[in-house]
Length: 324
Image (cartoon, one colour):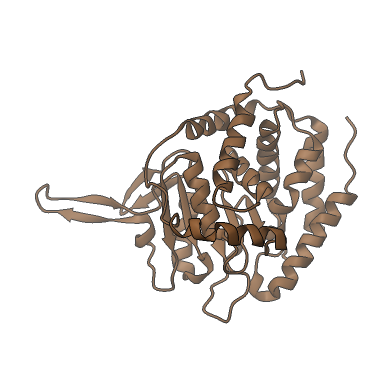
């Protein structure tokens, strides 16, 4: 039976996260909400935008707002997979190899400028992002829960980039574009620039909060959300339509349907409902689908990304909502 969720702390928690992030980040309300919905759904987020628009500050502030452990990995061409996942070192006193865990072991991991790392190093994230575990030597270790990778990349550059592979980019539930601020927002950024200079240090590397506990609870409860047959058909119709306009054969794959389904449930929860509406699906359709239509930015640059966004937007507008 449709109705409001009895637990009113959900919207209060979302408001608390939004306010904490916006204490350091100007605007970006929709981006913050989508990041929180992705965390609840168990997804990862790819942030994209030109230098200086606040990708790093946003990721740091989000991790601080939810109260989980945070690690930042600055990706460079010379970084090795073991620098991310960790390695086994020999303990002479115990006469055995013991794991030295890498920075991937955190609730929120910021992978800064992922497309500057070599494909070999990029692939170190695959097992962690898909299976929530890491293999060091011959042993497998579970990652903290919840676990989220926030990747950033620059869409265009003068060189030295390794575009993310289709396999890697498909691991991200959402791609969120951080464009240039409006004149009003930039004026507010100027006003906050002095105070932000002293707040640029990373948030605490460990800790917990009520927000983190609520996120874990909501993740477990999200499977109880009601999704009607009509909404499910609408999700499948959107993905089928996206495949027809995609420039990449075989994309978007089934993960697109899964993430539309899961993140729509999270958005509905944050909006205070225990059932999903087509409007929830529309709200997340572009960030879920766009990077799967045009994943190889080196082939088409920013223009191909703009075409992909336009294609998904048109698709959402023209796809009829199935009647119950």
